[in-house]
Length: 142
Image 1 (cartoon, rainbow, N blue to C red):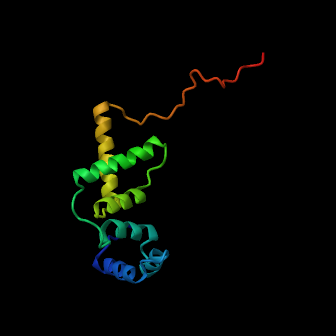
Image 2 (cartoon, rainbow, N blue to C red):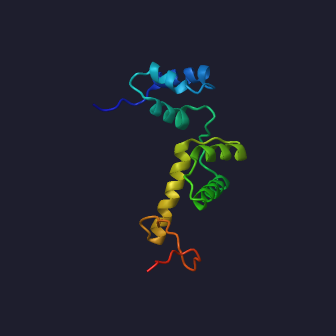
Image 3 (cartoon, rainbow, N blue to C red):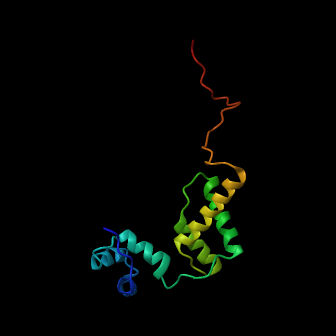
C-alpha cells in the first residue's frame, strides 16, 4: 500500500501541537499519537525540514557554504562522525539564519560527489595507520 503524503490537515496538527508542546522532549511522541499513520521519525523530519517557522527558505550563501565546509573538515580531521545538528546550530548562531537538515546534507553530499568525479576516486580511502619507524614494534622471540 503506498504511503500517504503529508497534507495541510496533518501539517496543521503538527504546527499547532508544536506551538503548545515544543520545549518538551516528548513533543514528537505526542504528535505521533495524534497522527496514527505517521511515526515519530517522519514527523521530526517534516518539522525540521519544512514546517519549522524558524527555517530560512533562501539558498545557502557562499559564506555559509564555506563555514559548513570548515565545520565538516574539523569533524573529518578528528575522525569523528559529522554532527549535523551541531553544524546547523552553529550556522544559525553565526549567520542568524536556520536551514533544514536536508539542505545542509544535500549541499555537502553534492560537494563530495563533485570531488569524486574530479578526482576519479569512487570510494573514500579507508584509514590505515602507518607503522614506519615505530620504536614499539613487537619482535618475535624466536
